[in-house]
Amino acid sequence: MTEAQTRQFATLYQALQGFDDRAAQARIMCPRLCFAGSADEIDYGEGWGNVHVSMAGPLVNRRAELEALGWDVRVLDGLDHTQAMQAQQVVPIIRSWLTSKVTAASSTQLNER
Image 1 (tube, rainbow, N blue to C red):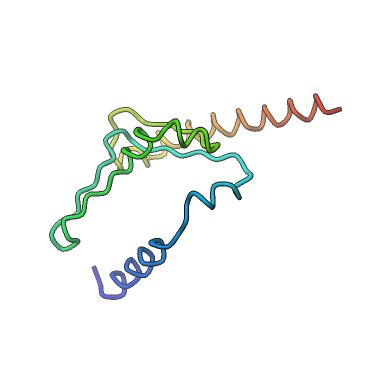
Image 2 (image 1 turned 180 degrees about the vertical axis):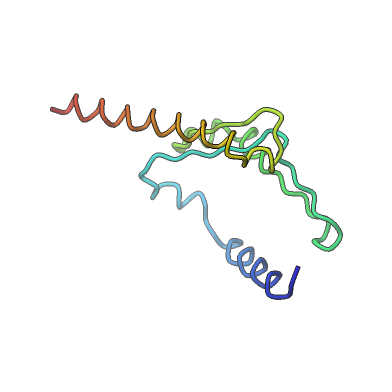
C-alpha cells in the first residue's frame, strides 16, 4: 500500500472514532438494509497491527437491536466478505428488499386515499 493510501485510511478511521452512531440512528428516516456473510471475518496482517475486523459479528450478535432501530438485517449463511459482495448474492437481496419497500409504500398510499 502506498503512503497516500495509508494516509487516506488513517484519516477515515481517525474521523470515525468520534462518530456517534447511536445519535445518528434517530435522524435516518428512510428504509435501511444491512447485510454481510456469516463468515465475514477479516484478519489483517502484521503490517496492519494484526487487527481482526468482524463484519458478521455485530449483525449476528446485535440483530434485535439493529432491527429495533429500523434496520432490515440479512446474514448470508457461510459466505465470507468477498463472496457476500458478489452480484449473484447482492442483487437478489436488494431487489427483494426494494420490492417489499415499494409494495409497502404503495399500500400505505392507497390506504390514505
